[in-house]
Image (tube, rainbow, N blue to C red; front, side):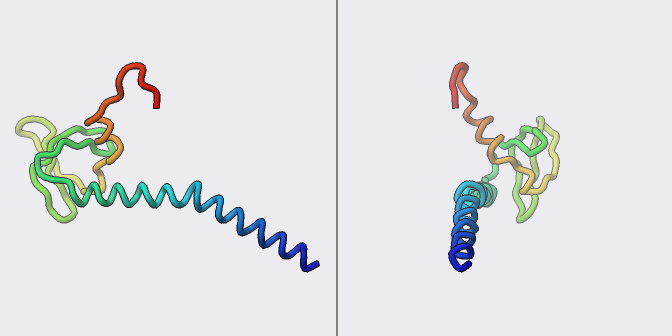
Length: 100
């Protein structure tokens, strides 16, 4: 009976480790990178929002950004609306035939 409990505990522990290293840890790393990107973004940077709007940052406040989407047209958005992955993709578009 005790060996069954030990085996079950080892299986549960190994399942937890697999979930942690394959799912939780990469998501935590990605969230930290996004937080750092949004904290260090500067005036004049070209960004893309989660909704796909491209623009240039006119001004920054603690939680909001003034984003110029065309000459003379600006919108106010939340910092968390900036898409880190879309912004990086827009700044470095993939080359035709490039496989990732």
